[in-house]
Image (tube, rainbow, N blue to C red):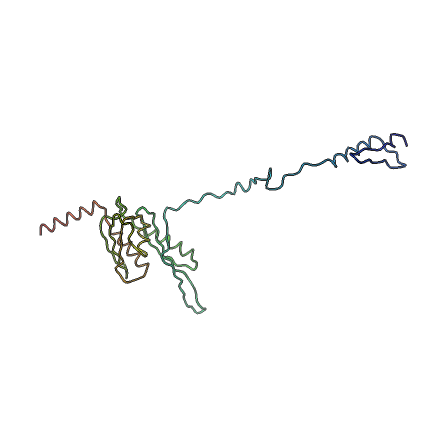
Length: 230
């Protein structure tokens, strides 16, 4: 072996002696040393997932949910009952829901829905309330121009303007008046019935009888002239 092949290869702090009895070219030894140096060189630390280049996922960005639009009509459940029907195979349960829906600007309605699931019954009642809503002519004070009274089934409701007193009502009538957008009004339940659906329907019927202030004044003047003639 030549002196060149007997030389030791320095690799960092370690020394690698050549194999005994084998002639190794200098070029091969240099190539092996270069490969060892490349493998043993310290690698750059990869950024953990969720940080650096892995922080943004383009797929998730495209899945962003759109903002929910607030519905125009607010709703409120005034009564919910579980109904049982007895059949040959046993009992079947369903739900009956009464809902008041209004936009707080003079439009309000009452609806009823029945279904085997509560959410489905509420949705049916809401659609029915929107279908049968009425428009109330509100004054600038947030009330009606005159007194009204109506009867629906066993429910009798009397509604009157109460400027400066707020909403003076209770039960289902209060929910109807608030969702209609009234602020200075009073109501009285004259019937002994506690059926919330009938009372709410009576309130809707009474509000549908309300007339604007100018029309009400014209009717009053006509009535006064008729009484003077008689």
